[in-house]
Image (cartoon, rainbow, N blue to C red):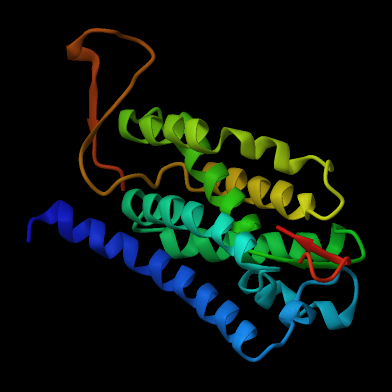
Length: 219
């Protein structure tokens, strides 16, 4: 198995495992005829603190889960492929930071769903591509804008059933982490754009180090 294929398989492993866990939880909820939204995050309530951990694992319905699954796979794989050294740190920091911030600043309702993580990953990868001026990462950033450009509307309070707070704060967490980890890029040598010159001699080579419950806010 060549290096690129092996690296891709390693990169997609955790995103597939995470998304698979989300589906197992949702299918279990359906089979047991239970409503797990009570495990969501409820801001400023002691009972809602557990939701910092559990809320991204709970989804209002199958459509809600489907909407989050593909972005998690695409963005998660990009994170683990290009930022293997810090990928777990970034993923779980986005997870925890978003949850804590929503607990302090969200509306008084149950917030459920993993799209705060989706927004965080998008914010991280896009911002990193711009900051590092890496040809490869800029290409990924442009792909994210093309595929998920409409996500920007999700950070605005347009739909009372959508946890726009999770979207906004997740994206903010991703941007902050992109700045913090700006020196952590791909582990392989790659071409990095410079400001001073335009010809080939000026290219630097661098090894980069629920709809069922009205008070549930989907994210």
